[in-house]
Length: 463
Image 1 (tube, rainbow, N blue to C red):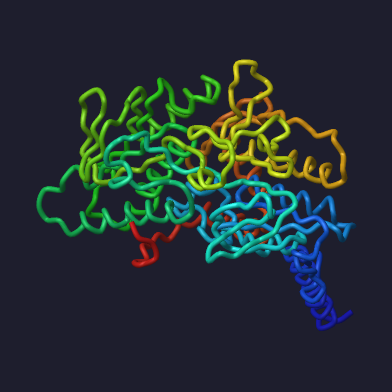
Image 2 (cartoon, one colour):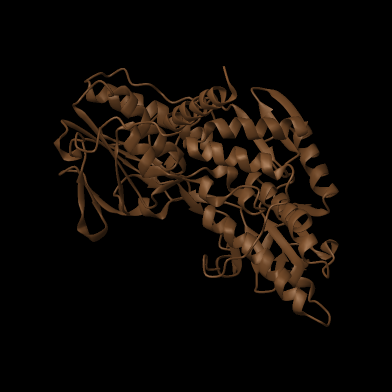
C-alpha cells in the first residue's frame, strides 16, 4: 500500500472518529421537533418549579420512568435557562474554570430528556384549578406539582451586609468578585502615594465550603495570575481574611480535615478568624463583635442561607427559617399532589430523633429529587406504597487551589494533590452537559502548563 492510500485511510478514520465523537457529545432528544406533543395534552402533567439540582433531578428521573409511555408530560419552569453547577462556581474567581461551562444549558438538557421548559418566575398557585400563575398572568396546568425553588442569602439582620458586600450565589457573583479584584489592582497601579489598606484587603465572611474555596481562589487569582501582570504591586500586600462565627471552619467535616484545610489556608497567608462575628459592614470596614475592625472595601458574604422568599406567596404551610413543611415522603402537608424538595423545604432527617433537619446541600437535593420522582410516579399509577426519604450523606469534597483538597468520601478521608485530582474527576463526571465536560477537562489540561489569561470586561456585570 502506497503512502497516498495510507494517508487516505488515516484521514477517513479520523473523519469517522470525529463523527462518532460528535454523536456522543450531542445526544439526540427523545422527541423530534415535529413529534413533541404539547405539554397540556398529556393525561398526567408533572410540573417542576425550579431548575437547580433537585428540580433538574426530579424532571430527568420522571422522563426516564416514562420513556416508554405517552401519558405523562413533564414541564420545568425556572427563572434562568441554565443549570448552575455550584461546586465549580468558586473556580470562576481565579479563571480556573470558564463561566460558560459552569452555567450549563438547562433547556437543551431537558428537551433531550423529553421534558418541556419555560423560563418564567412563579407568582402564585391556584390549587383548586391546578394551575401555576407566572409572569404576565401566564398559566401552566399541573396534576403533580414539585416545588424546588432553592434558597437565598440570610443576612441575619446585620447592618450594611446587603449594601456593602458581594454575594457568592452563582456564576455572575463569581465574575463580580473576580472583576472586583482586578479593578482594585488597576486602581492601585495608578496610585502614586500611599495606598489605603482597605483597597487590597479582601474579607470573606462564612467559613463553610463556599467561603473557604472562595478565599483560596482569590489567593490563586492574586498570586498566580495577577502578580506577573502587575509588577509594581507586591502581591504580599494583599490581605485575605476568612471570618467564621463558629469555633471551626468547615464544621461539617472531620476535625483532622478541618485542621488540614486551616493549615493550607494559613500557609497561603490567609488570615483565618474563628469565633469572629460581624456586627456591621460599612463601605470601607468590617466591624466585629469583639470590637476589632478590619479596613476593607472588598467584603464577600457566603454565610447563611434561608428558603426562597417566593414560598411566602404560595399559600403553603411553611416556617420562615426552614421552608415548606413536608412529610417524610416529601409531600407538602395538606396537599395530595404537591411536593417540595431542596433548600425551600423543611425535610426531617430520619437518622436523628431530635428533629434535626436535612442540610441544604446539593447532594441532599439530588437524593430528594430521586425519591420524589419515584413517589410522583407511584401516585400517578395509583399506588400508596410511597417511599420515605432518608438522607445518606456520601461525604464532602472541598478544593483549596488546583493542587490541594480535603475530601471525605464514604468514611474515607484524604488530602493533598490526590484529593484535588479526585475532586476534579468526581465533579467532572457529574456535569450534565457533555460539552462542558470536554471543555472543562481541556481547560484543566491547558491550565497545568499555561497561566490563565485574566481580564476584566467592563459592562458585563454590575457590582
